[in-house]
Length: 363
Image 1 (cartoon, rainbow, N blue to C red):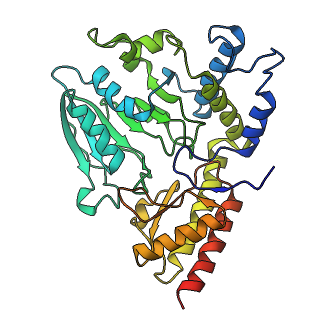
Image 2 (cartoon, rainbow, N blue to C red):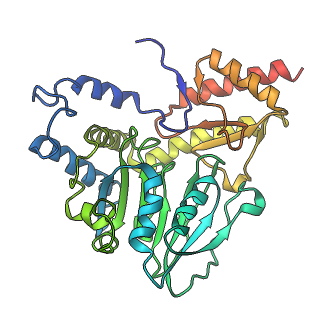
Image 3 (cartoon, helix red, strand yellow):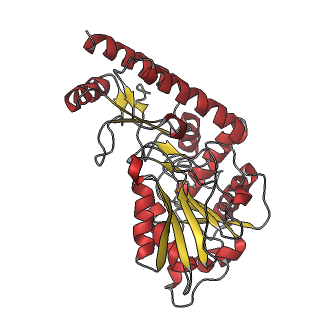
């Protein structure tokens, strides 16, 4: 095998090498069936065992809380931006949104098309370079839910804790930091995530919700957009993205092998600390974008003195095998996405490159 790239893509993103190698070994003949899992019926026993195993393994990582349902859907988080208000923002209710950046704003935009909304908190005045304090939130009696984005992939911010919303369901878009750390799932009514950052390849979206939130949907909705359709059919109402779900199950096995969520968190913290220390110790040559208390351990955003120097950094990095370090086109700058599957060795290689670049261009 040729040398693998140092993959810092924001999504689709790095997958564990061990998972890719296992999938490679099973790609043509899955468990002696003479078929790839991509070729077999989603109604057959062999695939359904994988489907159910992935659901059970996911809940197991959260301690098997009672009353939650795992759904495997399609359309990414962007479809959930619409499905959530379509199913939960009923007449006479209003939905609260916390504005923390690009993805939170997109979720709010979709909800406004469906019904009444309000901004519960925002970091817009800080140019989304921090997350707001949610410890003193006051929600109206008719709040349908409160929506937060746990990690903003583009800006590079992350909530370190989540608010107690009482009887109001707390819903979180966790696309870019799900399974990166332990947290209390029972604090949430629903979490959801596109798989292509920490869960697996693109093509499947995971929703974990309290059963009462997905057991009854407004009857006027098209069948495919109703949560109760997918809940009552165990996510097999239509043909699921079977290969992506198989890969999610393999990634979940890998997470267990890393010491479950606490083990993954420890490794993620070590990676992020190494990279942030390099930025902070550069005497201003590299500048972190986000307030320190709100820094993401998944998406590290930083700048150089000029856009010209940033372009030179990207060019030189690509020549050395680094992929995905260019910041999102909406904000510019530089970004290293260091999800679960990005090994510490890749961070060390990036740090060594940054120090070399610093030495060359600070003279």
